[in-house]
Length: 195
Image (tube, helix red, strand yellow):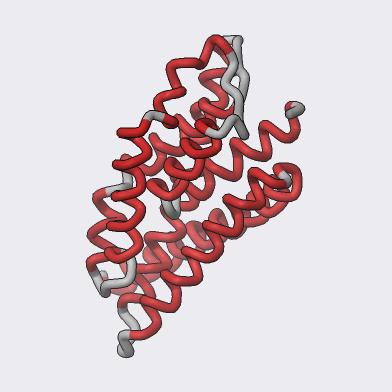
């Protein structure tokens, strides 16, 4: 893989980690185990993603996240708990993909991966909190299923065609930034009208 493909893969998996961390870790670990991704010598410690224990725990976490995300308000509690976990996972995933032998690039990749995961997590958590205020109970499961399909599809695309995945991940990141900004403006409006 060239640098553009690696950046596309790293950006995509980091962004998806903000939605579905355990699924992303599981699929990335499988990809490493099946040699779809080869780690450079200086990052062999990240081969831990392909460890059978990590694969089993991430599969269990993906299953738990799948069901927790469908239950009204439990999804918001789950998101709150994972506010620190998902960005760290996204940063580690980006670091696992990119061959950054220079320590400066390792820090840059770590920060960008964590930032992408934090942005997508913030947009997801904010959107889900709004969906939870809906009076009918079906919208939560519909939105969650849509996220499952989008995350799985983008993960497949990230490994099949990283450049296209990078373009889609970039568009999703812009969407996430827009949602976070609009949510912040709505929050400020609500706070100022409450005074």
